[in-house]
Image (cartoon, rainbow, N blue to C red):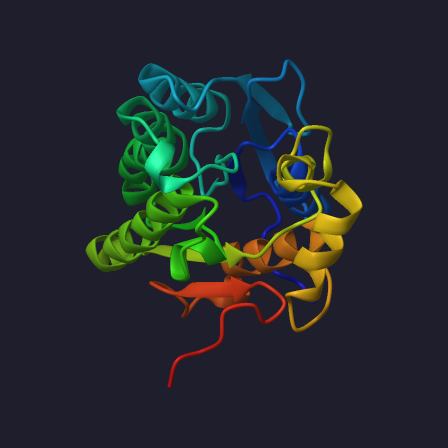
Length: 248
C-alpha cells in the first residue's frame, strides 16, 4: 500500500530510541525525508539535530535548521516524553514543572514553530504521542497522566484551529510498550519491583496479553501522517492492546 509519504519532510522529536526511532525508520522506508532530534549525538534521520526538548529555544532552532535544509516541514511527530513511578502526595512543584516542560510544553513549542511554515505550504500533518494514562489516569504516574491528558486536549485544539489551513492533528495513546522506558535497566518495571514479575503483570493486564512493540505503535503514527488518513483529524487513536475500552 502506497501511503503517499515519499519525499514528505517529516520531523520526529525524541527519535533516537523507542517509539520515535521506530517512526523515523518506518518513514524512511516509505521514502520520506526524516529529521530526527534528541539529546543523543546521532540519530536515524537524513538530518539529525541535537536538542533538548525542555529547553525553550531548542524547539525553534530545530524547526529553523530543518526548514533551512529542506525548505519545509510536511509532517511532525511530537514523541518526546517520560516519567518515573511516583506517588501523587510526594510530587513537588518542581516535579510538576519538569513534567509539564517534558510531556506537554515540548509539543506546544515545536508545534508553534512548525505551523506557520505548514500554513505557507498549504497544510501538513501532526501526530502527538499521548498515552492511555491520558485517558485513564495512572495512580503511579500522576503528573505524567495529567500532562498526557492535556496533550489530548491540545491536539484537538490544534485540529480545530488549523483545519482550514489544511493541517491535520491527531493523537495516539499507546499502552505500555517494550522500550527502554519500561524494560531497560532502572526503567518503569525495575522501579516497581522484580522486572520479570512486573512486566508479566503489566502484560496480562492488556486484553491482548502483552506489551506493545515500538513498531506497532509507529505503524499507527505513520498511517495518521499519511495520505491514507486524509479525512482523519482531531482524533485520539488508541494503540493499547484493548486496555482502555470505548465508552458508548
